[in-house]
Length: 427
Image 1 (cartoon, one colour):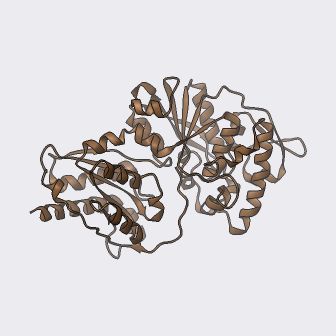
Image 2: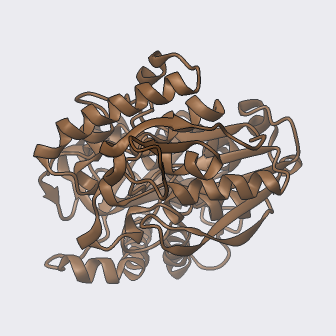
Image 3: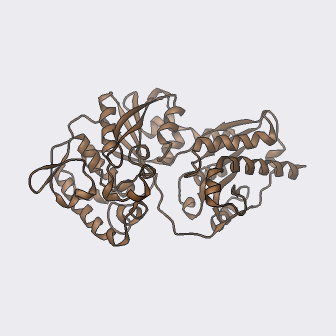
């Protein structure tokens, strides 16, 4: 579930919106129920670690009698495999596959029994079998896996994603869930397709191996087809960017992956040429290039849709049903959530802000904690949700390296401070 990069904003170090704590603090007892549902704090802590830190902060002030449900969130990137797999009682295998630079890495492959999923999840995605494989692109072709000096779309491949799909298929997967957030690639999924049987052929007739965009100018045609019976693939995605153009993969996501401004247009044109050829090779209409979401993760969804008839699903809606978040919100007296940076892009996102909206619909109070808070975004929350609040966990005059290194402690402390203030307010 990628989100479109936002322009730099003025960051508000400390923001406290009006919060009437009395309705919930008055019920402090063994029956009180707090939901801690956090997304990851990028470069600082995982979603699970954030939930644990927040829970510790609550218990510091309110004691162990408080019931706390921890529900780590995922945007389709880091944590997608572990969160979905473990929450459904599944197990994770490690497999040696190709990393984003072609190096051998160990990557997770989750396995879940569809019978362990909620009825709403099975309604959301009508799984036809029991064995569901869960693949996380961030762990096999992720941006964080690539050293800064080598971050550029021309260097990176989705080969490992295809290798995991092949492994899952050989292991009798009935369906594959693919989270595509946090990718390093912009290769149209051609690396993955190479692993599955579709080859890139140069003008001299030779097959191009280990395909990356570096070799794109030499590709004359495609040969071969998907050589295994791939089960249904469902791609978790919450952006509607098309493959090409000013809102496409190269223009929007290319820069954060190393694409320079003067490289965007040529890269986009070459992407169009190859995408058109791939559609023709797979006997699929070229209009598929215009499908919303194809611009996510460098076009891997496009490649898999054209060749394997993969389908996009709303990532947050999937996670919400998979984790049964609505029920957890209904059962809670207070909802705590957050992410690394809460800004204008958060308001259009599908993570903590969507949870805030869910809490509001259920008449529950929700507090958002973030490493950095944009004042305009926080003001929007105050205006739309007067019972809610946004807090930054970062102490005044704290450097970014210090904030990232001490994220869990800072979250624990800030949650404790808020709970303590609530007690004083109630008293």
